[in-house]
Length: 158
Length: 289
Image (cartoon, rainbow over all chains, first blue to last red; front, side):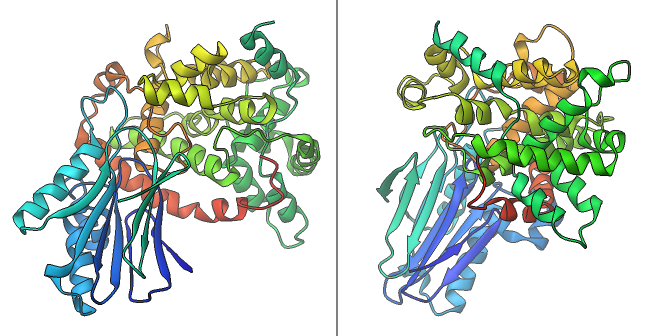
């Protein structure tokens, strides 16, 4: 097994069945995976914020920092590798929020941005584990597309 | 003796905070190492910073202004004394016990502490405020109580987590309910007993509940929000996750908007990248935390 680590505002893509893509310590950030079961290629992006409204220059510098540009760029790169857009299976984890947060709601805003993007592109989200206050680690196994969330020592398959 | 008294009695015995002294020791063994590199290690490490401030604020320096930052302390002590301090701290800490429960992987706690410090400073800068020098230090030390509870006190975090997850109690309040004290208060009490200045000890003690602080402190407000931001960004999250309350009074007092927070988050992620080497080197097997 070969582990590919996705940092904050980062994306990793793999075409090798022995690879596992992982991102650790998702707080309000959103981790999104996309997997083509026929070609067995997939990717994961770790987005910090929903959009680049507050820092426009950043979306050009690093599109993976934001949900709207990061997920789109990830799909584009998968298609460049031969994936079929219609076959892609999308899953998401993260988007946690602090308690009593009436203003920032970054986690909720991140997930809303994903829903908006998918609605616009007629894409379905196959599974998700979002919200709450817990930290999460997200894994994507390239050999079969298994997507696993680890939180507080417990693993759940999405 | 109840649990709170037992914890406070242990706090009174603490001579040094666990730190990444092995990394500093490695620098000391390198003939080409620069004192600037050593200073950088110390000022980004909560344990070394706290221990150093304890030394410089000890009674034999009384009469001078209390020191609030590692940089000031290094200047005050001079190089050779700083080196001796680092070596002795490293030796003292080989006796520290790690306690199961708190998720205190050394690099995780270091990452989170550094991020709180950077975020506190960054929030002030985004607001266009004149950010006091010790803001970073106060943020860096804000989680020191957790290290202490994990390393010196037999804390079983499971009943605390149960309250937090099943009954929706914020993590620090759950600590109060189970232990009679929370890690912010423990950290504040320890640093007070080490004669660190109140500007820092009050921030450490109240950073999770700034509304309970009777005075006014811009640095407390910045560290409270810095801690929120660091947890949302997710750098070095522990089992407590995001299970803390945001003070809307602080948000209003500072005049923060979601856009400002977003901009601060972007800048903090960039700045964390600049000190990434510290985290990587800290994940060593010899670390005692």
